[in-house]
Amino acid sequence: MNEKGASLLVVLITVSIFMILGISILTVALGGALRTQIQLDRYENVYSGKEQLDYVTTQFKEKVTTIELDTAALKNGSYQGELDTLLGELNKLTDFHGEDITKNYITDYNDLFTRIYRFSITSGDDTSRKVISKRIIISPAPSFLDYSLGSFGKGKNDGQLHINGSPNVDGDIIANDFFVKNQADFIDASGNSTSKTPFLAVDGNVNVLHTLTLWDISTGGPIEINSATLEQDQVLPSFFYLDRKPDVFSREVDFSEVNFDQTYLDKINELLLGTEYANPLIVEDDLTTDNRQDSSTKVMKKVVETLTQQPDKEQLNLLDDNLLLDDSVINQSPKFIFHENLEINSSLKPLKLNRKMVIAGDLSLTTGANNSIEINEDMTVLGDLIINSNNTPINIKGTVVVHGDIIIEGNEESIGASENDTVKFDATIYSYGESMISNTNILGIEDDKQLVLFSKGTLTITRINEFTPFSFELENQNIYDMTNESVPPLKAFFYTDDSAVLYGVGSRFHINGGVFAKKNLEINAIRGNIRPSTFNLEPSISVDQNNKKTRFQVVHDPNVLVSQVSRLPVADRLRVIVDDAEIN
Image 1: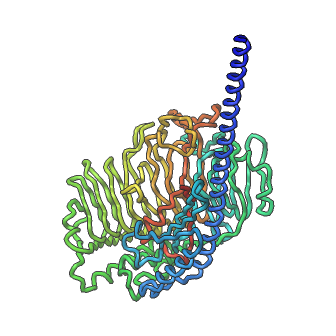
Image 2 (image 1 turned 120 degrees about the vertical axis):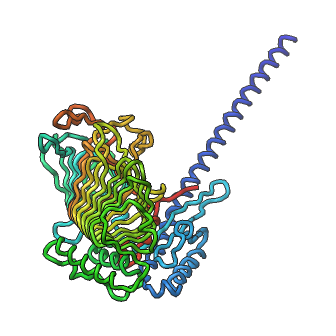
Image 3 (image 1 turned 60 degrees about the horizontal axis):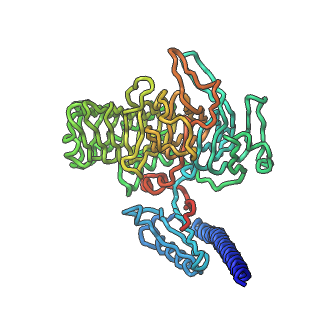
């Protein structure tokens, strides 16, 4: 009997164990199923929320773009009232919340058309609720600021974008005609040379209005794909870095171009006469001479005659010295007018210039003896502007109009050394001549500030961090992440009404902003370190460049629409710029 009882007890214990295990497995399975369902609900809520937010944003865009840019309406408050009414109508929608957050970014915006909003959609119940938000900017700023790289225009030969080699482009690209080749061109002491490379990397949309030309130098000649068949083409992935094809399409865009001559006339007259001027001092006929030197002479004479005849006792006119070493001479009056070429040099002490300046000649800013120079007001330079940061920073803040060329340069460093010359900007510059930048870093005075450079003539950026090796040559998991490198990015948007050719071969520079050329933009770039020999460059031709950091990178910075809003050109209509979605 005892043995039978013991057997029964063993059976009961075994059954109980299996029942507990079964219940546990069932509980885990149900819990996993429940968690999976909750996660699926969250994904569905995110997808649904994004769809709803896109729909509301489209409605908002359709109505905003019909609002006229009327200065009188801006000043009497009816422009703001119209926008407030539109936002109020949207806020009646279920689960939607829209908020005007302009004051968080712009302190004095009542005289500006730009406004900034945050749109949010709440989707789902308590267990899987998600809030999807986007920052919405309405602005009359030109369209090129929406792109990392671009070449676009309505002229017959405008809009030619050439990417030779393997740069990184984080942001959107636009071009009339886009040429892609896995070979970088460069120039050294031996003449024109080339280096085989991977193709370019793009994290963004690529809009090609006419023709996309692809050329793999290893397999044959170029392949042309027209806009009609672009989105269906199956060969595209192999012509991008590591076969990671971005969205490539051909779509007509409502592109707000820069009318450079009119913009230049608006800005130079505003700086010379104030924003409320009745009749412009500089007109189109002053620009349309046979050559630019004649135009400069004509404009200088006109400005000097007009401004010196004005009964303005606050203006200061210096005629006897072309070298300025003391800032007190300028800071004693609200406006400083100089009638000849002028050099401002900080070799004796730091200089802080807090007055508006008009220079009827060339202006040279040169630091020396570790003394900095600060320009804190608008400048009009009727000749050339030369900025030379000699191992000591120069800070420039405001709107700058240059009727000649602009040259921003530093000293040449020893081979492989990083740049130690820096010019810091919170400025927008309009140059009627050519623009040249070499041997210097371009930074923001603050983290969210930058340079926006508009150039009528060609743009040249060269010898930036020349031959400088990477601290870590291999890419990070995010190939656009350069945070483990000591070389700072150039904080700037560069625009030329002409053409630009940029080299990330011997040079190594990364841009936070964008590059745009109306006629022709050419980028050349390799990956990995470069070895300079006595007479020429030696790219890693025989070494696989895949998985190595690029020597040329552009990361789009949308904050320029906010930080430089009062200095940017004003187009003929409002545009709506939508940031990426945030999910909480």
